[in-house]
Image (tube, rainbow, N blue to C red):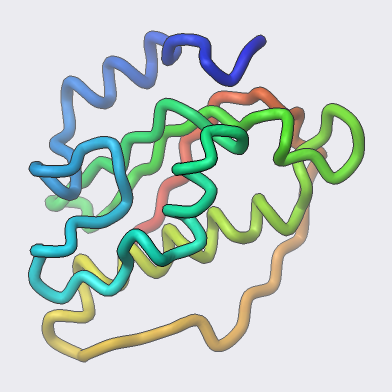
Length: 139
């Protein structure tokens, strides 16, 4: 599959059911005018997104009643650590970023700025490149 392929039906269904985290910027991970927004065009996710080589078709959605944020994306070939397998560091980056996004949305307004102090990941199996992913983070 190609990183430019259209999103799978499950992704389209989710995107039609849940609102984007940032209404004015539904295809990005930031809205510089959003209250308490720390991420911007200078973030690692923005750099990867702008390159167009790492992943495509991102959607950052919000499930406010469940205090969850959901990221839909398709990895690209340049996420590989070994041929055809996504690098574990990239997978960890996605988990760390989503945990931070959930914190910023649901906790930061009352507790203030936070950041990752420790991240331990035990991988269950390798992730092929050019995969459609759903990354969910909740608080």
